[in-house]
Image (tube, rainbow, N blue to C red):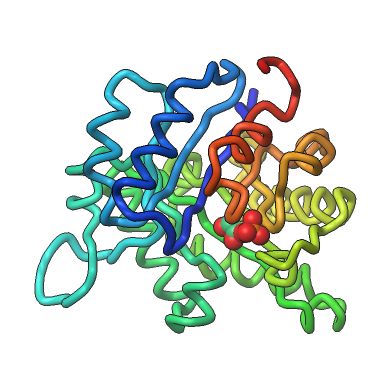
Length: 253
Ligand code: 13P
């Protein structure tokens, strides 16, 4: 049984004060048992947020990490440092990192391997650009990203990985993929993972959708057979908006 995961990627937003206010509102809300909630704040807010999450079920994630544990890598943050402040998930290979920081599939692969070694669950982001979709190579693009990112990773480790399908053209644009488009790609990702590993890995794999998920489209997206959750950017920055997505099923008001 795959448990729904709703993750908030705050990107480069929120100072410590804003972060603590936002997390306090989430802690005070009654969250549905059937949904795992994850927040991925900027590095600077991880420590204080972890302190107030002590009695909460909300999970803490980072938006990136270096694959080495320590050393002369100015400006980087290691998996051990993340563990030290309570991080249990890390977003790897987000399209913004691939685009603005030249992260290659090979680097993404190194980071995933390192996260797994250190017991941090990687959320591997894949997705095509608008040009790639218009050229009908979106599946080929995503398949290549998956094959390269998962190279050399054994099936018992692959079980810890979450995959987020984020079509680049839907990120921050207000343009969501239709739920059919999103589900078709989620199913394709699951099939590809089955080809690389086996049905045990693919059936238990969490596939999230990301790209302009909001309170008013969450229920439709989440109702799709192969979508197990959402990776939310803009709408995770306000408690009321994020809670609407978390409570997409209207179980709790
Ligand atoms: P938006 O929800 O703002 O479109 O961002 C999606 C995203 O990139 C999450 O990682």
